[in-house]
Length: 329
Image (cartoon, rainbow, N blue to C red; front, side, top):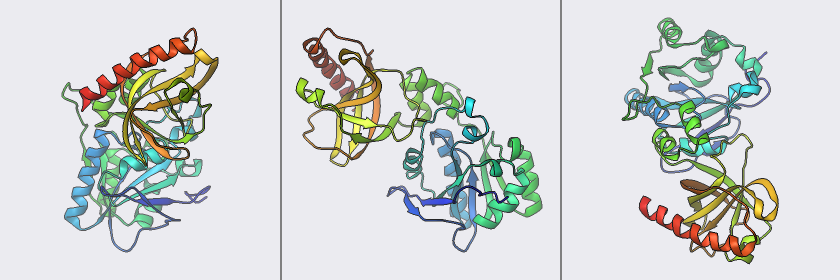
């Protein structure tokens, strides 16, 4: 069975100056060689950016194109679905983060059981060399690919020596406190609501990208109109429920604001929602895609005795949120 069984290989061009541009049905790159890296790159965190910086530098020095090969869905969703982690950057969020990396191409391989069955040698021989013209490989210190992740650093170096491509291994990225940056470390920080630790590992504040959907317009009646942000993926990891100071990037500009993440108990609504009030923003955003960045947790979500009590609390929340945003500016 071909390793791409069950889906097309898709690719995007990425640059620091523009959002990723889709290239339909990419099967091989144009003529020439590629400096290449492989991995899931969930979060596109500081450690990932270090690998990509090494990749970019090698490509610049050799005259090759810099190419990242990544996977969708996350391998654990196929191989260990009951233990698959929630994602820091599902779907387009990963592409948006990669667009700032300076690499030439990001190629998304559909991860299937057929692909997982390939040994490291088969993956190199049947995918990386013929399809992407790999001439050199850059990987992180803990990298492993192929069946059972058996393609570790030593295996890759042996394959490289045999097939004539050098393998550069990038050491772990350490924070000033000595902690090693990893996707697992950042997931733990987000799940625990430690936004500062998550931002330290990511190199940017944690955020979510979603489309603005129509809500029940309760906020407008309360004097605090809101946008309801629909998650594009149920696999997105969110911090704990609560009210947050946030920043929003929208087609109409950037705004500070406050957001309720979680249920709306005052109105008997137990469903998860992301409902943000944007400060000083008289704009219509229905249907637009926005990015909401978490700045600071303000308080827990709780039930109020009625709309008047909720409005009083929202006034206090606005003061706290504006103060938090001002301290970050």
